[in-house]
Length: 487
Image (cartoon, rainbow, N blue to C red; front, side, top):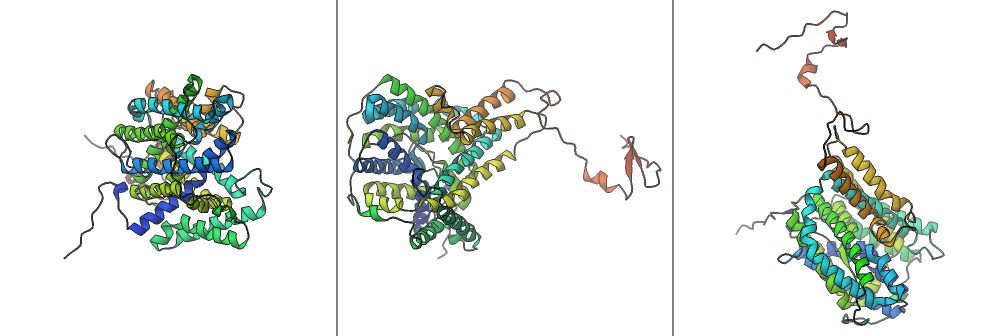
C-alpha cells in the first residue's frame, strides 16, 4: 500500500514528527523565557513580595502564558489567529502596573484594572482589526524592522550578564560566552542536515550552557529550592479591587498591546507567507484579550504576542503553528512544575544573549525585506519610513527621553514598537489616504522616479556610439539615422 503525504493548505498548518515538534517547542520556550519571567519579577519586587511569593507569581505567568499560547495557535471559533505566536506577559504594562502597586492599591488593584481593561479590549477587538487596510508594506515593514531593533538592546543586556546590578555585568567572560554561543549558532546553521540547522538556536543554548558549566558561570543552587509540583491558586494574592484611575491607565496599556499584537500578527503572517485579513486579526486580538481578562484569576497579568519568537520563526523557517502549541504545553508544565522552571532559569543570560543577536537581528532583516517591496517613486513613502523609524528609535537610543512627559504619553511612546507603529499609521494616513500629491510636487524628500529603456534599444548600439544633444552619433561623429515606426 502506498503512503501518501498530506500537504497542508496553509504553511502554518504543517504537521511535523512528534519529536521535532517538541524540540522546536522547547526552543521557543527558551527564546522567550527570560522575557516572560521579567515582568513578574519586577512587579513582585515593587509590591514587596518575598522570594517564595515572587516564585508563585512567576509560575502563574508561565501557566497562563502556556494556556494563552495554546488558544492563540490552535484556535476556537472567534478566538485565536492560528498562527505560530507565543503569548506571555507584556512588557508594555510594567510601568503602569508598577505605578498602581506603589500608589497604594497593591496587586489587587492591578488585577482589577487588568480584568476591566481587558474586557473592554475584548469588546473593541473587532473594530480595532478593521484598520488592517491601513497596514500596507510601508507600515508593516517599519514595524517589523523596529521590533527587531527594539529587541537588540535586550540581547546586549543578556550578553553582558543579564543583571545590571551584578558585579560581573559586562565582564569579558560574559561577552566571550555570548560570542561563542553566537558563533555556534552560525556554524550549526550552516550544517546541511535539516534537523540540526533548524535546531541551531536550541543546540547552541545547550552547548553554550555546557561551556558555561565548565567555566563555572552557571549556578544550579536554586534548582532544589521550593516545591516540585504546585497548582496555581485562584486569587492567591487577594480578591481584585477596582480603581477608576488604574482602569483608565490600564486601558491605555491595552490599546498599546492591541497595536503590538496586530503588528506581530502581520509580521509573522509576512514571514510565514500566509493570508492575514481583518477577521484573523480580530480572532487573534480576542484571544489576547480573553487571556488577559482571565490571567488575574490565577495571579498573572496582560498577555501579548512575543516579538522575539517571531524572530525564531524567521531564522529557523519552521512555520508550523503546532510547534508553538507544543511550546505552550511546555509552558503549562513549567507552570505546574516549578522545579523545571528553575532549571530553565539557570541557563546563563550571556548564552541567551549570543543566540538573541541572531534571533532579533533576523526580525529586523525581515522588516528590511518587506520595505524593499515598497514603491518609493513619486510619493512620500521614503519620508514615512524615515520618520517612523526615527521616532521608533528614540526610546531605544535614549530610554529616558520621555521621563518628564505625562504618564499616558510614556505608556504609548516609551515602547519603540508602539511609537513607530503609531507614527507609521498616522503618516501613511496623512500622505497616502487623505491626499495623494503628484510625484512632481510631492516633496523634495520624495524618492526620484527612475527611467527605464527597453533592452532591445540598447542592442542596436555599437561600440563607440553616443548621444549628443539628443542625436545618436557613431565613434566618428556621424549621426545615426533613427527609424520611426510606421503606423
